[in-house]
Length: 367
Ligand code: SAM
Ligand code: FES
Image 1 (tube, protein in one colour):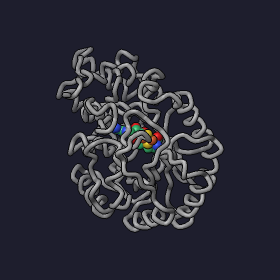
Image 2: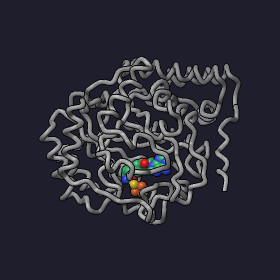
Image 3: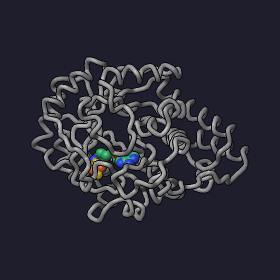
Image 4: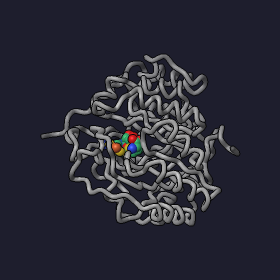
């Protein structure tokens, strides 16, 4: 079966000069009507493409200069109790080769990362029932004890508030939990019964109330996504004001029911990065691995469109090829040192600079 048709995003809604004036207003006031926002999202024209990039870059450089923050990503388990329809490590994928790192292996990844200059470690994994609070809290405490000058970001899905609080008290600073889509019906299409939109949103609020720097975000071009859902996503981001926003193209995985769907495009992802930078000038915005997977220069394009974070992989090389959320994922073969060297070269090639810093959100600096 051939690839299903991607959403046609290229429907101009207003003229070039009107769209430029919308961007000017967005850059000054941080707001537009839904219709104007939709037009800016969908309008495609080489002159306009450069225009919006430039505006977003100016805002990014005003807040963060030429700095690109690096986060050492440790994918410590691919066991997951959830069955998200789009995800290659969903529990019903019997072809996934499962692994989980020992506590010692996680700590050793951090030691290697520290030597390479990382000052933020991102612990990401499926919702692995093995990582109870009793198991994860001592790991967080040990990382903080070994590297007190580093930030710890968690990305381990939905838990209860008490659990989030225990991990925060142990030293976790930030939490990434993509909202995935701000449209409830779309959320229910992408997830099985038993996962709820309301609970996802409640988790984000709990994380915020506890004091984490919170990250949310969505896939671009996910099955069933409509442009108006992206507007809802942008409105949600505008209202919630997350300290971090993770977006990347949806990419099909061969063992999921969405295997024949088209991937989201780099162009739309880059456009959204620029709009998010203009809506949330201070947010920490990664140029993701998924963006680098759909376009070999995707991460550079993302950085030039307003992103200011990259997340090189620190997972041991023998497990990298197993954390496969989607097909053809890049950076699954390299050692950690190769990954950071490659990333630093890419960042320098576009006139930016990798900085060895915790890279907190402006409002959390010095806390
Ligand atoms: N379990 C944690 C959670 O749910 O937040 C973290 C791991 S989860 C795999 C991280 C993110 O990967 C998800 O939030 C989702 O947006 C993204 N992801 C999963 N499958 C994907 C796919 N096929 N294409 C692109 N991104 C995908
Ligand atoms: Fe759990 Fe993807 S379904 S990480």
